[in-house]
Image (cartoon, rainbow, N blue to C red; front, side, top):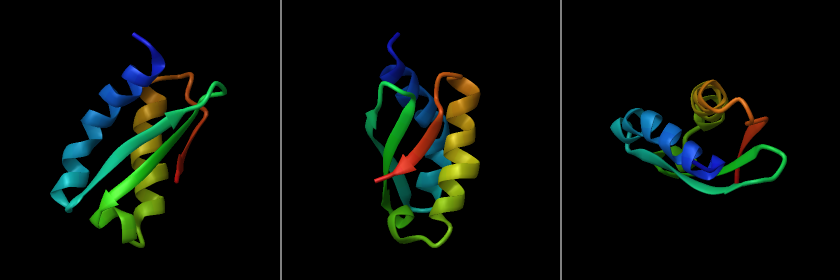
Length: 75
């Protein structure tokens, strides 16, 4: 399984929590050096807590599942 597939699988674990609040996340790209770029959508796009959600929720989950991930960025 390639890294992009692993990221999608991992994102599917956090999506229910995002969707419960009216938002979602879309994978934009995974770079060669382990940076995941995501787009927060719906309620998450304009939420003041989105940075916290990205770092403490999504990034933490991705790094636990996929050690190759260095960081997660919103685009």
